[in-house]
Image: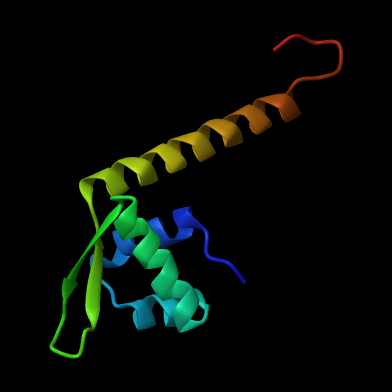
Amino acid sequence: MGLAKRELLAFLARVGEARADDVASAIGVRYAVAAMGLLRLVRQGLAERSRHDERSVYLYRLSERGRIRLRYFQERSQSAARGRSAATTTQPGQEG
C-alpha cells in the first residue's frame, strides 16, 4: 500500500509533529513506507525534520510550503466536489 502525499500532509497538519512510527501506526502503513514518504516531503520542501533524541529519531512537521500545498489540495478537492454536485442537479436538456 502506498502513501498519498495529501494524506501525509493532512496528518502532519492535524498532529503538528510526528515521528515516522507515529505516522505508520496512525495511517496503517509499514514504517518504511511512512519514513520514505516523510523523507520525500522533506526533500520537496513540504516538511521539516529535527532530531528528537540521540538515537537518530526525527520529528517531522509541515513547512510553510507544505501548508500551502495542502491548502491547494483541499481547495481543488472542494472545487471538484462542487462541480460534481452542480452536474447532478441539472436536468438533461437544461443548461447549467
